[in-house]
Image 1: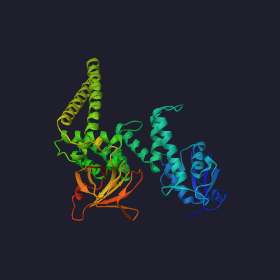
Image 2 (image 1 turned 90 degrees about the vertical axis):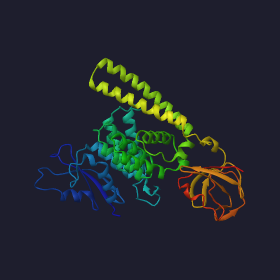
Image 3 (image 1 turned 180 degrees about the vertical axis):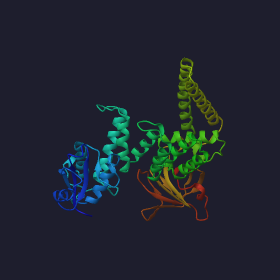
Image 4 (image 1 turned 30 degrees about the horizontal axis):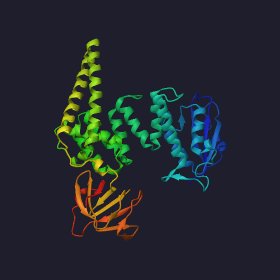
Length: 417
């Protein structure tokens, strides 16, 4: 860690350009060293800020301002001073009256990250979203939104990475670039958010890279945690079903699809309604405009309706399960993991005793097993009362290994006898 200054210099010969660098000495000394015969006028020091780790601060600033950097091996940026100084102050924690980040022992971190960086990337994300939608008094500007969201993404904001991927995929605020979109979705997945795999799968399917799409769907299901399923995931389950049917792929994870069958059907009906509306509008446009482009858009809209009709018909006549997710609500436990004979769970909503028989279900399979032991905080118990935060391990009978194929993705459980 190197204590020192971040400084901002200007030169009358370089209009609209600032130099942003670091020094472990006084910036005034560094400024004198920068004078050269190649520059007709001297530099002026316009701002300096002390940091407990100037190396870290410089790297963070250069990353944030990378799009305005004139050259990767030079510290000159095409930015007005009034934009640069608030960014430095924000990074230093001056914006909320706190001392410089990492400058005292009371500094707090979030998940091992510097709090100032977390606050900065969150602020950039919120500003980007506000610019995209024109929220409150913010002017709607998709290019500005892209600029802000990309800065937030570079600082590690997963939501920003996701939205930048959308922008490049759709050509919104930036030039359409599918490989770049895929790269951002991959970054999301690498951060532990399985939505990145689903979006990669959908995008690969759109550009007819079916094999890659299938691989991404497999990664999505292998990494999804059943107990952390969000509303968006129901849409992705429908998308996976559509992908499999449209490309004659063997349908996997049917147990999981059956479990959420009712929710998936609701999504399918909504998608079909919207597709029909879009098709009807496209048909009107094609009749009015009579252009090749309008006709192509109508045919695509018609094709989408046909796809949704086929998927919805499949849902109606297949994936008929004797249980659904509703059967597990408020009944026993959310399972976070099954590993060998061990069932790790939390949020039990009923008393569970040794000797009870459980039905547990998840992404791949449904099994029945007997509760042989209850193990909490390194102690064995005969029963466990309802709790919202209990973490326990059920151990099935020693000669049973029926839980092994269940997988490590989690699911739900209920007492059956």
